[in-house]
Length: 437
Image (tube, helix red, strand yellow):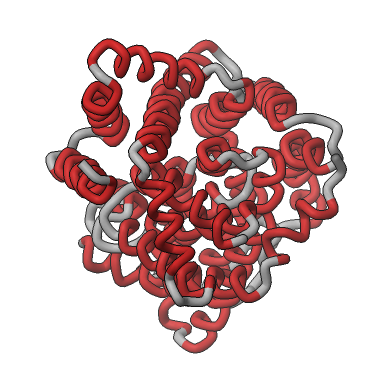
């Protein structure tokens, strides 16, 4: 069997398993085991599967994943996140689209705590949506900003998806977490500017309302209590990596400790909070580690059968400029995002994409950032973006059609961010280039 037939059979079998709703980790594991037995022989294939899984999951670089997830779970289960959003609210004046802008600002801060797009979307939906609707805000200025802000959780550290992509793609986790900061902030800025412009052009979408006067003393006190401690956690997680003082694992551990202290400070660190946080962490971490193990074995199978080598050769022989090949790769990711979740896309694309990127001379950090942005666009892309269904669970009285319509402008805005990162690579590479070793 040549490499083309092997690739067609593997991809067809994988798509069939995903179409019958087999969980992505189980689908890949089953396919990997069957393929390993076929190409390496029965016992030898099974031994290779076990050795590959052991090699994948015994890496110290994976430790930040459960720690970052635990941070987010603790913030979610302790109820601190909504209080932080309330503190942000006190600083917003009579800006056009005030509540929509607050959603983006709150979502940006929340991203430094949750690391999960689904969790951030759920928190913002349950916290912001009722108040926005009570004030007469329409779907484009309520559902849209919530979806757009939920995406930021993967683009601003700590990002479990970022750690996963870096680990699977063979990138420095610390460098990659720093590289996604500016693109994440750019996405938030573009979303905020769009909301202001739309609120000015169509004021009926975000009606003005009477704002209660809040004294400077009250603003400062809530900032000190709810926002400044968050700044310390951000420094522990991001600042120490940037300054070269701590590794991502050490920073994740310190950030987790800081989150626990913050929950205790607010009197919300109890056995119930810890139990729910640990259970949530174990469930999510188990799924992610399953994916990592499957991805590495999948890469080895593609390499052994000659698929990776021959695909690279074909790409190098194509008489096209690298930029056009890059656009083709991005287009494939965006199409996959219409139907598949981020983990599935990572498992399918990274084993093939990263070697191709290396052959074309693309900076791996820059290329990794582009992949992550594409995956997060898929999170809010109709018809099957996970963020859309999280939003539907929060607002049961809203049709999927209305949710789709609210998401489209932000999909377009984030596509513009991809274009900017391609045109100006320093958006992704500047911060890593100045960080301390």
